[in-house]
Length: 521
Image (spheres, rainbow, N blue to C red):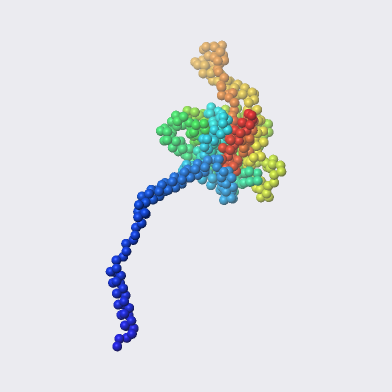
């Protein structure tokens, strides 16, 4: 007798086998194909392709629109999003500054940087902001001050923001770290800054290398070598490398150089001229930083005259067809008549081409507007050592520009310098006429020699008007017009750009045009 369990397994196996065989023999029904679907398949494919093309085009156009908007200096977020975001992400002002410079440098390398669109320049039709400075026609009178681009890393990105003049530096002959950190502080309630950087610099050799490479890259794009570009064969200024633009390079002495040794100080500045003069349209002699001990002592008439004369003489030796101009940057705290007259005398005596009026101030009086309250933390910040910059500097800047304009245009200085040049040339001519004599009397006789001396022409550049650039408190078009009407040729922006963002220059120019149009009507 077979166990019940075994019978059950066999029966199950037999049933399963039989079912499998039956299943194999029954043919599977073929899937029914919809006649309608088959007939419309080509149309559906074409429709899908059209939809994909429309979608791709839409995405591409959206990308173009976003690109144009995001890289336009007029974009909302450049003023109202980026500056406060930087302050939030980077509580330390210097860290925020370094991040902004790094971002602009990287964005520029991919052509994603903010720039002023050409259409902006034609806004408020017919209003002309153009002018000529040092014989160069400029599209507008707005500049970016030194300090934003300390090491000449982003001059082209700054030019793209719409400024006609960009100042890089300050640069010292040898690298120096500057003062200990923290050394830059915000006062948001006043839109102000306090800094005590102490002229941190990578040195003149480093900056010269960077500017030289910039010239060489530009030369490759126009098919010229470095020397040809610097000699003007590209049809652009050798510093800015852009039509209607000027590049200023600010130079200063090293902290370790004894300010009482004028010869040693002059060597510092002369070395900077030797290294950087070829790549600058204008060299700026900084004797006004409040954060380098003893630097402002160089604004006394005697040491300043010696220093500026050495710089001018070296600039005239620059291996370039058009030599760089020279300006001196003076302190807003040197505002007594005697101090200012000494600076003016040094400017005229040395042959410097102009003055940049203003820098940060050590003073803390008059920087809080009436009725404006600041937080206890901001009150503590104002006690930090260093130079202050902000909107409340404007009145002081305007006053200084008016006074410097009057002093620089004074006939006494022009006549003094012209007289000195004429005397020097007459002496040189007399010496040249003494030949083969023992007594020192020319063979032609005194009468003829006097007549020859009388024919010496006046030197035109001795009476050329000195140019003034103004910096300090300029944050709007109205501010810019005020300093320009006071006698400046260029209005320079620094702190206003920090708080106002990448669109500040465009906004200032737009406000200037509006103000000029209103005045006309």
